[in-house]
Amino acid sequence: RAEALFRQLAARFSEHRMGHQARWRAAWVRWRRGHHAEAEASFAEGAKAPGANSYAAANLFWAARAAERNGGEARVRAYLEAAAQQHPLTFYGQQARARLGLSHYRMPHAPVDLDNVPLPATPATRHEELAALGFDLDALAEAEYVHDTLPAGHEHNEQVEIHRFLARTHHRLGNIRASVGNAEGVTWYLAHRRQPVDRELWMLSYPRAYWDMISDTARRFGVDPRLVLALIREESRFDAQAVSPAGAVGLMQLMPFTARRMAAQLGLPPGWSSTDPRANVLMGTAYLAGVIRDWNGDVALALANYNAGPDAVRRWVGGGIGDRDLFLETIPYLETRFYVQKVLESYGIYRALWP
Image (cartoon, rainbow, N blue to C red; front, top):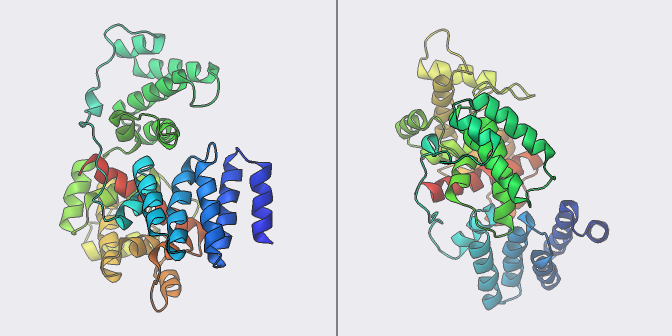
């Protein structure tokens, strides 16, 4: 019955994100039931669907896993290569590269100095002119006005460039959360459609904010600083004042009881605050290093622990993970499943940007 409902939704919303999700879910139900030939056909069909976007890579990856069960070795490789080549920075593209035994993807372009991106020699718009004169706040207001008057949707080049300008300007002003918000939508819109995305947009979407502090702290605790960046990006979008509905605070979204415990372990002086970037990164990185050790270096399980707590992960793991891909796809808490996949995806992107 679940499969039938998903297929109805897929037909009704064929070109909408909901339809692509439903199509993928219908194929997933077939895979879980052991109908691997049918599942492979459904995943392959979903990967080719117009506008599949973020679901294209997922469909290709799981078409490969279904073909594996059908003894189709050549098809397995073809699906994995398509996912790895067409969607290299997505979670599933990264998983496909790992299954193919390939090294981490590397961004082909040279790094960009985001703090010193030159303004146009001859400003073509009023907001560029204001920025050239040093009136950044006025330039932002003008750019926001222009954005609101443009047709909706990133398919318009004007929308791409206005989001780029907003992201650049917010980054220059230190408003990293706003910068990421403006850059990431257009970056992934282009990437999912296999259109060119320049390195600047990727770097604005995945910035190295607080890099010196994060790098020093991460190395102190034996953690890859790019993993800490990825976690902070998904937890708070680099907003040091962020407070979640559950009460988690700061860059690494520490719950108060966790922060108090880590502060005591680290011997922080009285008056420490979770909204202080240095204290938060120190406590959060020390805690992350601890959970990575607890799970014998398994980053995925450590991230699940960071989000859902150790007791939940112990229940899920039981006597062992078994099929790792299946485990990552069936983490019982939807929030944790999405969180683990997003942080791993971001981690791969940071490694691609800064090998």
